[in-house]
Image (tube, rainbow, N blue to C red; front, side, top):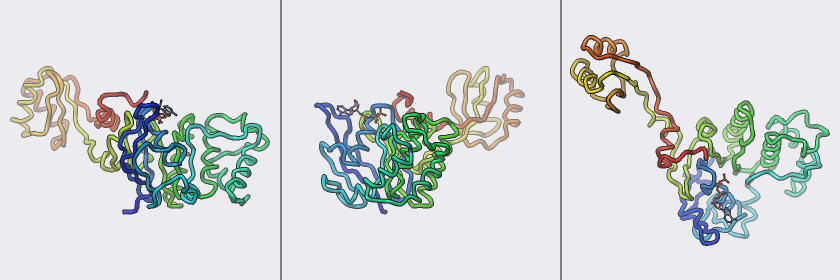
Length: 307
Ligand SMILES: Nc1ncnc2c1ncn2[C@@H]1O[C@H](COP(=O)(O)OP(=O)(O)OP(=O)(O)O)[C@@H](O)[C@H]1O
């Protein structure tokens, strides 16, 4: 397996406080890797270590198979990033900011500037200084700048912060396109699960500086089974009917009124009928999906992701 990023025991201590602890993360070539965790979990600090903005206290970082050191300018040149808020020359226009970035990076191709502006859907911006941009527009401009030199690895800290739902969808499409068409590898952080779940291939869940889980999104989806929720007057009685009359075994009594039936092999009609005939009163019967949110929240020990 080719990994674009690997960290081994990555740890950071700020003023005696450990904010990143023994993180071993693995980002595969060409994937979109999502970093999920509440504010203050340590996402930004890890991203800063990956881009040499912060020095690790201990542990190692490998990027493109090479160990990252203070002198790794050649590795940094193959990366693009926005960490925390993108900073621009506020009184200049978007295009002027991008031209300056090209010069700074030793890269000049005016055609590319139009391409990236179009890609992030920043239009009708001529003559407007960046200081008049909305937060969403600044995010788009930041992404345009980060992809201008076609990096192989793109690191984006909360890139969809400040975007409206349409903007979020557009950015998601841009990220997917960068990964599928340009083979770019992306590391994207967010504290909102809903933003991540439709976009990433692998998710790394981080809390209190620890990587709690690194798992493919497909595996997470497979784990989330559908079930039928039954609200009845007497769940013990209902359980008896389900197993004796309908031969069902895969259900769970949650409390005295609530049951969940997994891997349903009978129709809801059959269940309702059997329960009623046998004298059990049904208040409701609903098909449900145990949400991804439940899964991640249980992972974070009941702590809310929306800090
Ligand atoms: N330069 C610093 N000096 C001291 N403490 C710091 C420094 N930078 C970050 N921290 C602390 O490290 C912890 C992790 O912060 P970090 O910004 O990495 O979290 P995060 O998951 O990115 O959250 P956010 O989304 O709020 O940026 C926080 O408790 C923060 O206060």
